Each structure stands twice: as structure tokens, then as C-alpha cells.
Length: 361
Ligand code: ADP
Ligand code: MG
Figure 1 (cartoon, rainbow, N blue to C red):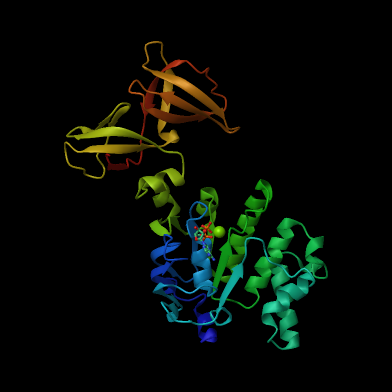
Figure 2 (figure 1 turned 90 degrees about the vertical axis):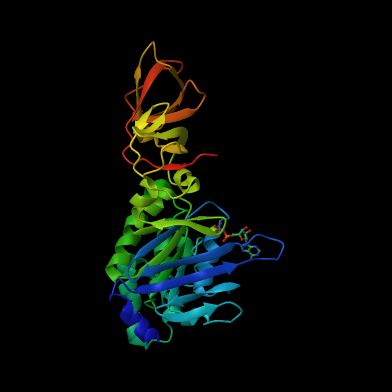
């Protein structure tokens, strides 16, 4: 069935390559579940980022899919074959056609780069194995370092070896656990691009987990936001950012303030403006309106009722915190050239392109 999985890799993109149904895992009866009723499917060739804070169940989810952990509830299918279900040993990891890139790379220190990459393809005939390994090393740009040992490589190079090792057996599905978190900012951005290219070039379906929303947005076709083991929202990066389904998602994927609003026939009335009732909430309803810093600007105005409380210099922008007369605060991102003194009286203006509201209270 492995061969048939492989043939799925580049085919029907709309077909689910991975499907989780009500998957749960609890470590101890007295503890809340680490993974709770997880249900989603991922089409062949797609890249999914599972995004969430530390401890939300990201690694456990990957371990369940890989087969290092068995679910207490629900089932997991890879390429239409059920590989795990509650209270069942399931298909062993090495038979799931899944490659894993661990957070710490987990390279074998006593093996050369070439031998590390060859590790998962030892069953191939010698000549074929060598050709496969060289192809993988070329793919990740390491063919000249094949004879080196892991400690002779930089962090980025070690990461590449880990990716090559995971891809060498041509898995149907690649799982990556916070793969870039040990790299510094420049290299992280570069590796992100490279890994994405490799996944696209090989038609590999991938799930990677991260706590970094920018990372999730830049690599993934789909982003799933996890909180306390539950999937709060699954959607395109744009949908997650502009139409967050819950306040948790709104705050986790970007700065967000929430202002009280009242739904009227004219729109949703707030302290900094009236917004379109895009979600067709009922007149009279009290809501909380999500405001992103890029929605808010302001003009210095002695008669203004808002005050600049703080300026956070971010290099490419200035982020201002404005105190409104009610005591509520909103943030406003401005060009880095727009430096105003704190204490300044201002008149805020809001232009909210994507009006998102949540029930008040
Ligand atoms: P993340 O990768 O998102 O940081 P994890 O999946 O590692 O989260 O952990 C989710 C929760 O499950 C945490 O509360 C963690 O302490 C707990 N947990 C994970 N693995 C085990 C384990 N083997 N034994 C007990 N608790 C665990
Ligand atoms: Mg983790």
C-alpha cells in the first residue's frame, strides 16, 4: 500500500491525504486532554501549519499522526487507509509513509551527512540508494558536504540534512515540528523559502507546527489555530487574519484590540467610528469589535479626546498606543518616520476593511 500512497503524492489535490476524525489524547485521567476532538483533513500536495502557543498540543498531534503516540479517541487516516484508532495499536510508524523533521533535528552524530540521509532507505539496492541520497543532497544544496559529520555543520545545514533524511524514503506526508525555531532570524526566513520550494518541487503534503504566526502565514496554504488541544479555526492565512473565528485566534495571529460596539441601523457604533454591519448582526445587539493597528490612524489635535500613551519603535514602523476617553485603548501602526511625543492629544480615525465582531461579555 506504500507504493499506492506514493502514487497519490502528485495526483488529485482535492483528495484528502490526511484525515483526522475526533482525535483525542490525554496524559492522565486527572489532566485536561493534550489533544481534544481534533477533526480536519488535508488535500494531497497541500501544506498545513498548525499554529498555537506552547503546550497547546502541537507536538502531540504530530506524534499521533506519525504513530509515536496512539489516540484515546477518534481515528487517523493517511491516503484513505486508517492508520490509528482509539484503543488499537495501529499501523507502526515505519509503515505509515510519513517523514518527520524533529525540532532538534535528531541527526545521528556518529554518521556522516550521506549516511544520515541514507538511513531511511537502507532497503534500496546499493546503486539506487546512492543515487537517491545524492539527489536528496542536491535538492537541499548539500552535495559538497556529504562526507561531513553533523557537528561540522551550521544550524541551517543540519536542518537541511534533517529535511533530506526525512524526504529520502519519498514519504506521502512530511511532518515538521517547529523546524526553524533554532535558527536566527535571517536564516529562518531563507530556510522557510527553501523548504517550501522543496515541498512544492517534490509534491509533498506537509504538516508543520509552529508558534510563530508569520511563519505559518508565509509557508502554509492552510493554517489551523490550536488552543488547549482544540482546533479553533482552520482556513487560509488571509481568512485567519481577517476573519478570525474567535477572540483567541484574533489575538494570536496579530495585534488586536476590542472595542464595545452597538449594532444600529446605520452600522456598528463605536467610540472611534461607525462600521459596516458586515456580519448582519441584529439591531440593538452589543458586540466587541476587533480593531487591528493597521485599521487605526490619528491626527494631532489639541481638542482631540484621545492621548498617545506609548510609542513602540519597531524599526520599520512606529506602534502607538492610544487611550480613548472611555479608558479603552487601541493601537495604531504608523510609518517609522512618523514620530510623535507621548502625551500628545490626537483625534483617532478608523478605517476597518474587515469588520469582525464577537458577542459582548
Ligand atoms: P506543544 O508542542 O504545543 O508545546 P505538546 O503537545 O508538547 O504541546 O504538549 C501538550 C500538553 O501535553 C502539555 O500540557 C504537555 O505537558 C502534555 N504532554 C505532552 N507529552 C506528554 C507526555 N508524554 N506525558 C505527559 N504529558 C505530556
Ligand atoms: Mg512542541
